[in-house]
Image (cartoon, rainbow, N blue to C red):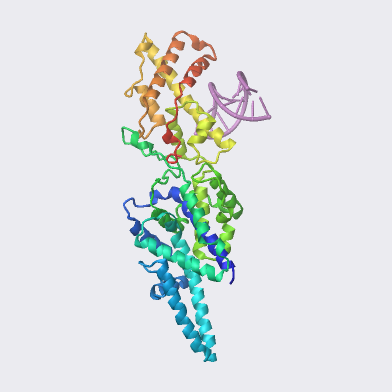
Length: 453
DNA sequence: ACACCCCCTG
DNA sequence: CAGGGGGTGT
């Protein structure tokens, strides 16, 4: 009962911060956009309380019923000091009284033990509840006051019971703050499109976090996440992926990936073994959820959504470089196998593309088209419909004009070569490929942002 | 040796 | 779309 509670508090708090930050990416599809911060906060608290053990529920109740230790909405640090001072004076009188009654010393000792135990429990809980709000909520609303008061309370506790005032909350807050602040701003490319851009729901976590998401929602969702993890995110990945050894590795690779955050590692913070050692049931649940969510966010395999995205990319690039692929699929843990698979996909796309071109070129020759200028590829053309059906089956993506131009050029190339009888050369298509590969255009940034990756 | 591509096949 | 063979370039 010396420094270990304080250390635990700190580690737990750090875990919580990393966790809430790490969860951000899959948050927004689970939140009602119209939910106010306060309402959301309340909902989160309710969910959070469902994780409390019976003892903790009792403590929470006591907290509400004990005015001398309960944080007040309108309270301030000076108020706290004043009340603390009064409390001390009162206790001093009581102690003086009991000094003359030795038989009651044991009783008062028990009472004090109970109070201390309760304060520790409540303080640990208050750290969890207050951290994200302390970081970023600059508005002096009631919620903030409550959280700050809890923080002060907790700080006081650690100063008195841990004897090591340097490790405390401010450092943890600073670290957590850095995680939030360092998150790169997302560019909202979609607003520039003249047509309601299809949501581009490509990948497993296409529901990426909106940049200016209120902290309350992040905070709140961490708790909801803890509840849902066994049904939702966890079900997206195979159960075999969660052995303890891999957990720490995957978490670290997540942090170090081209991901939201700074390259700093939080090994201790993300170490599930450490969190399990804390013997806090709700922390354990969230540690599992954190690990699984991280796995969930960094795919080890390509999904059908990745395939859809790749097909749409084909409208811009027929021969994507590895770099482009990595930029557009940075939610995937790249390996030789993944790269090969992506390359193979585009190879298959090209194959279909060229087959269609050859087919329609020959068809045009048979139909007696005598001038290449008569060969066009419009959006109403049969050729385009065939291509669109293959690469954009849902027809929810606005195919760029540049693709129509490339298709037209390709069709004419095939037509010319065939009409000249060059298709007798076994490698006659190579010359066409050489032309077409130079017609790639840049993949729009929206394919490279976290919204789509 | 390796990466990448095309072609063929199922 | 994936697997595999064969070709080409570095």
